[in-house]
Picture 1 (cartoon, rainbow, N blue to C red):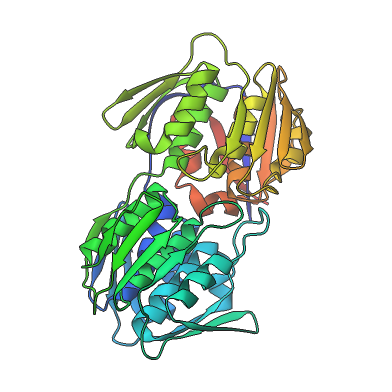
Picture 2 (picture 1 turned 60 degrees about the vertical axis):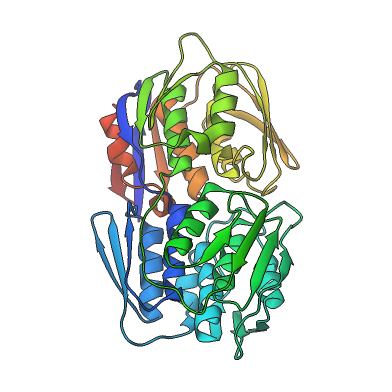
Length: 421
């Protein structure tokens, strides 16, 4: 197991290119289970989660070749329907194989998922949607067993939950519906760009999906789907993370390969705080001249402020003069990073789903431990601005969602390196 060592106090400057979006890639890889024909996925990030999904697909009868940023997925000639606990338990997005498997093979046995520990994230909406499509579901020894011997049938499905729409449930149900008889409508669907990217890939495979990017998606089922070639959208969360890396160190960064429309809420909030953000084609130029002011942030499903940027924003607000408040409405328990930031000298008090942040002049380097993917990023950001040396343990969380993070930061002027624990 590795740890990251960060020498704080360096101003970041230069250019960084954003990788493909992990949260778009993983469901798209799962969607290749809907066809026996070859699929090619470009701009794929080289991440721990990518390799986990590759192992899952191989266990289900696919042959996968990953070269640079291109993944080619073909059929080995044999199809299997059991997604093993050892693979699914380490990554929540792997549960997305359930819909494609039961739609294509008429049966599936998929372990309940794992992933980051950021609070309760039930799979009830996944199961509700697949049951509505006609799948017979049972749970046995930690596995969901789905059967549809006569195939799935189109229907109207409401996918709203207590905390809004579910991205992965929308993806799972949308994929399954592509092979269902008739027309399926998903009401209260997730609107995230990653859902739009998945729908575009499925349509290239021969599916007929309308309304992706809205709360109302319509899918006309087909008898079979074909292979397709697709390029993954840029990772909006990685782009947002680098925006904050520039601002927290007082630097000026050019962020390349960005779809700025996917970052509307983040750009709006940072601009309100005083950041100067200039859009040029697919680039963002980020910096500020004087100082940043505090802010109130409420995380919401897209197009609201993303929960996946909450921890990074908390690191920035920790060194922003004044009192800021973050309200977490997507995952109310997603505050594992608060205690670690406080160890570095931050003044953050949690009250239920709220975090009250009193900005301090300086953070101090310390030994901290990452609890999840985005919490890891917040600790790295804090380490970049802290006085002295920061050691971040459990870097495998970062490897799940950030491609070559240390190299990209070093190219911007950070002093950061990896050591064995």
